[in-house]
Image (cartoon, rainbow, N blue to C red; front, side):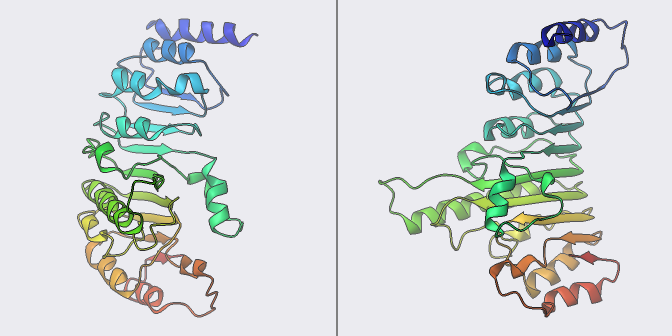
Length: 296
């Protein structure tokens, strides 16, 4: 069957409420590509009904209208959103986070970032790489209004300082100040998600001028903004390029995240190339103080 005919039949079925009157979940991950018009017709055919939506890929022409069309029709119903397109933009991600108030689960999987992380990790294989998420320039203050999805329970998202230095900028100091302000804003946004139970967070800085300003899970960078996440059970920071947590942060985590049962990526301090066999004191401290806590 031709692709066009397949989509036509699918759209006709979706538009007819008699066929699927209670359909609230739509999974299109096995459709490799669709045009902007096909995507729009599917959304219009399912408007005001969808609670769970999964999408694997779309082509460039539909990227321009993806989040706008979806949020216009599903923002008040969506509870679960899992999207994998590797060309999704920061604007798409921001529109979703600031429009879909009922979201409980949000995954945005972008396969092309895998190579970026592998480069940072000296091309070593890392289990679970497929859980990566990225939104370009999501740390820009002027691009980050308050998120409205305060019922989020599961979030997988990687932030990126993707702004390049221009000739007009006074280089190092201003760039680090800008980056630090943006990172504080990321921590603030995450800290407002008081119902969050599972968090996969990543940070990938493309700037060589941000050596002292990173989303590195330290109190100095703003971690204390996340002290309200009392329901946090699992946090995965494996995809943060540079983690500088130590004993101070370990004590803080135990004090402020009472429900925490799993931390992934914290022991990846060895990514600094000091490949020692000795377990850091703060890792031993976490394991001894909360024996039910899994630290990897």
